[in-house]
Length: 79
Image (cartoon, rainbow, N blue to C red; front, side):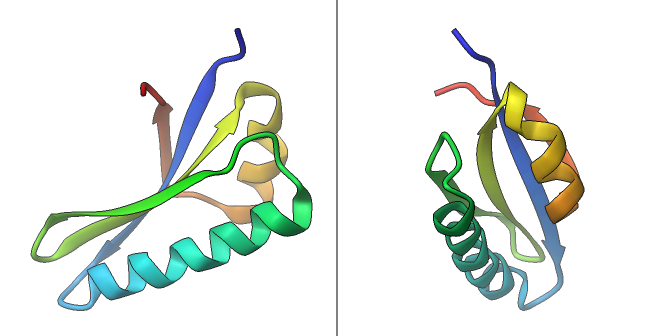
């Protein structure tokens, strides 16, 4: 089974949640254009001033997507 990785973009400040939600739309557009293996995206509010947008990719897709989209960090994805 292929490892799944969660690429994460951090947004901070009073508008962080709105920005993360909007960023997810761009991630969905990228998935549609590039026809990636997985179609898992989302956004979360961690606290009032910190939200994230994320995209889950397979291990073999990680490097080209990371280089193209420049996420702030990543971690293993567990469902």
